Image 1 (tube, helix red, strand yellow):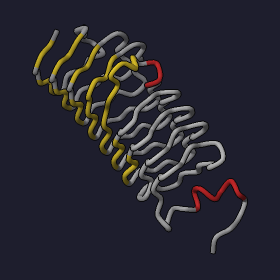
Image 2 (cartoon, rainbow, N blue to C red):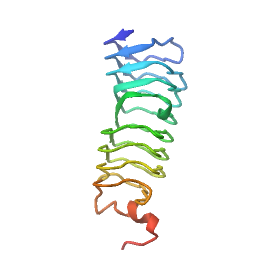
Image 3 (cartoon, rainbow, N blue to C red):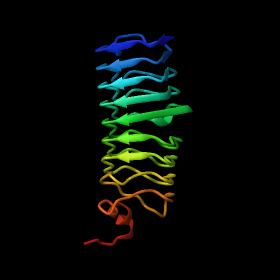
Image 4 (cartoon, one colour):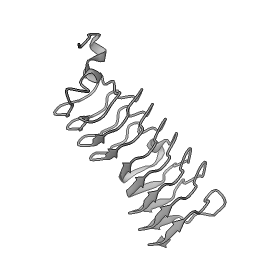
Length: 185
């Protein structure tokens, strides 16, 4: 187990990983295409790292912060759901999947969430602050009390999702009305 270590400019595609990281920080590191399966990250922070296409089968993310990271195509739905908790700040999560995950109170701040799958996920009380949700999929999702007030380019069908007490702004309300086939002028 690695505790309170700082890893800077490491290429983890060539380094054997430990089974557990607790309180560690990863800065400018490369994890692209790495198998993070069965690895536990507890209270860790990733800054300016490339984690595109990593495999996360049963990987545990317990209070993990991703900042300025590239997280393309990650199937977070394959990770260990026990105590799953993360924050994303200025990250690119294009084509990621959160299918059927319970990720209440998750903060997505200034993230690119294009074509992300949130189907059947519980995102209640989460915040999509200044996020681009182009072609993101929300189907049978719990969006209760979710803040979409500064999000852009989303299309959410209110008949297929729980949007009770969710927040929207008058500037982005068309993302809810798209499925009604009406025009706002």
